Image (cartoon, rainbow, N blue to C red; front, side, top):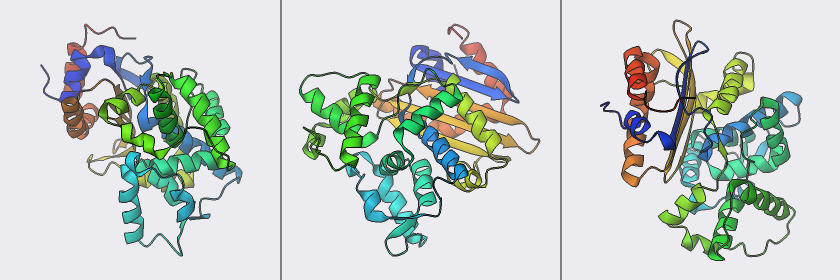
Amino acid sequence: MMENPIAEYLIKQPDHASLLFIKNEEPLLTINAHRHMPLASIYKLVILKTYLEQCEAGTIRPDTQIHIQELKCYLIPWIDPGFKKWYHTVREKNKIKKDRIALREIVQGMLAYSCNAHTDFLLSLVGIANVQEELSVLGMRDHDPIMPISTSVLLFLRDTVKNKTHTPCSLAKEANIAFEALLKGENVEGLDFNLLNHFDYKMQCRWSDTLPKGSVHSYRKLLTHLQNRQRYDKELQKVMHWFGNLKSYKGTSGGMKLGSTPKVFNTVLYATDKQHNTYQLLYFLNNLTVDQKQLVEFASASFNVQILKDPLFVNQLKNEIQHVHIR
């Protein structure tokens, strides 16, 4: 039996896991690659692509100064632990000038700190419809609709209290309508921050099931796009420094995004080593217990490095999961 908690979960809980590992465009390990899995923050990469396209078109400018208070309008501290860390960092680095900060810093905050306020601000800026269109452009047909985080939480809680259930598609539809209404200054019935008093561990796990879903197979398309684009897109190169450098992975460079809820742990990364070998690793884990979640979070860096650098580890894992139905 393999000692790494992620490898162990892939072997013992294949119905709640998917993985895709590719080296030099050749799939070396595939587990349930087409399985529809909760994405958590992984879908923020689609927002990144939309941002990059609009920068290239000149629709938005990365150096545009955004007032901090405008950003804080999207902040719900209870569900945004990364915001405080990001805010402390940009203040320490003197990135805030006269209460304003460059748009590029907000994008970096969404990626490096997974700030939910930043995500919703960027959705309002680039447009939810344009983000959805990027899914079509990339051919990510199995991807659920994108939704803002703030309104999705409050609507989920409002409706759960009324014993109304949601699928990712139904919640996205209502959350997007509510989001657009709020942006116009309109009221949305029943949205109340006091609802967050109900947002305990059990409720967070139920909310996790209503978030957008997708597959590692689809996200490989987006990773390939970003990996190729990094060669010429200067804005992507600047943003990539924050969420992408793999300095702890000796001899490699690349990009990474994590996604997490109380019972989900997801990772997508791409890397290039000094011999110019290219790698893509994507894995989505769902229905983790509290203890399992802690173990896989702690073990993730080790697992990633072993997959990238140790062919024997990859072969051993492949042999261990022979009983898994591989697509």
